[in-house]
Image: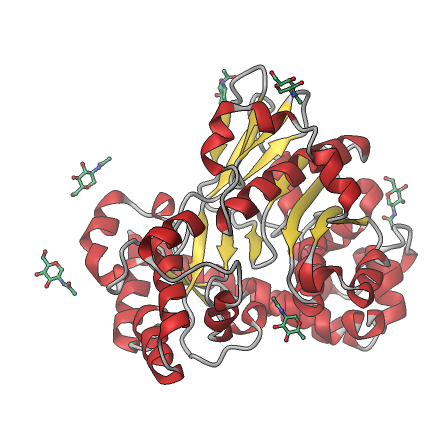
Length: 414
Ligand SMILES: *[C@@H]1O[C@H](CO)[C@@H](O)[C@H](O)[C@H]1NC(C)=O
Ligand SMILES: *[C@@H]1O[C@H](CO)[C@@H](O)[C@H](O)[C@H]1NC(C)=O
Ligand SMILES: *[C@@H]1O[C@H](CO)[C@@H](O)[C@H](O)[C@H]1NC(C)=O
Ligand SMILES: *[C@@H]1O[C@H](CO)[C@@H](O)[C@H](O)[C@H]1NC(C)=O
Ligand SMILES: *[C@@H]1O[C@H](CO)[C@@H](O)[C@H](O)[C@H]1NC(C)=O
Ligand SMILES: *[C@@H]1O[C@H](CO)[C@@H](O)[C@H](O)[C@H]1NC(C)=O
């Protein structure tokens, strides 16, 4: 059953990849950036995207017929936005935005800091339609000082602590503002994810988050996307979104018996099944009294939301996918590498361990540690876990990203 499932999954990923690839080959010559821009992302009325007038190859991919549909923003229902707090660089954020536009997300509310907020980067991001940037200015902080969060008892254990705790509070405040922005922009759904995460709308025949959420029963207020974690197979990944195809599935998408049978093989000596978080991310209907409930969930100030969980769709979390991520962590937050201090800095054991290694080991020791704890170099083990359905290949995002890159959309923005 699980073998069948994983093969089926692999097969559908491959079919999808081929479909996108065929699409790209077929349209490549016709889509220079100008037409791409006008037909897909900024001008909803581009006339020649009517697939029915194309040759039969196009219509044999129902996926693409609906992608065309997805491009027509005025047609998209429900309206979906993503909000994030990010300090990532331009290239990664651009890939992230266009990928999500491609699968049906229309609006983006980005709270930018660090590299993401430097003028050159902001200028490019702001030039994209329906992308709103919020900088961490003094005015923003004054505004957020008025939030009712500061009086909420459930938040007290996170307040006035450094690093991950500080980020958590900031994310909360930003999400709270994003809810208002979403309401103003007449969004139906809001999703909070980071810029190292991608939505994987599996379980829809169009690979569309619009289709995914339109099928959610009207009595449901919030839906959880369980998360899958990237499994890098090399230590020299430069661009995770286009280079990583292996993922460890959430235990919510495995049967209990399979999960426990493979328990210690899939941990690889780490303390938990996943290196980092395991509780997924969630989408919420934009409703009165909606509030964030940490970075992973939404809640309501006056009622208990009806929450469900997707059985196939997931968040792909590209965590520690680049070796340099280890060292860049070292520069973060100014935490002291002692256990007590680190408990005040990081929520997760793995982040603490990684921080200790990054701040105390030599480059070579760091690489060894990275091989041992992060990189999946044992092909036999990988194959076995793929057969079991614990690991799975997912090609759709990398193919879509590559396709977008080929259209020249990023090059012409920068
Ligand atoms: C886009 O959607 C609008 C509104 O539904 C519709 O009038 C228009 O014809 C659509 N354009 C294309 C190219 O499908
Ligand atoms: C910011 O960008 C610079 C230059 O590209 C890079 O060296 C640095 O690592 C980046 N910082 C972060 C936190 O990503
Ligand atoms: C928080 O509580 C204090 C004291 O009870 C009150 O003065 C203040 O108005 C409250 N702030 C908000 C935003 O509710
Ligand atoms: C919650 O959603 C489920 C559908 O997933 C529905 O069957 C159920 O009736 C809903 N519960 C409430 C209280 O609305
Ligand atoms: C899952 O399997 C474990 C180990 O076999 C068992 O202890 C546990 O009760 C099972 N849980 C469920 C919900 O079936
Ligand atoms: C996994 O657990 C089994 C039984 O508990 C044990 O015999 C085996 O050595 C463990 N394997 C690893 C890789 O830890």
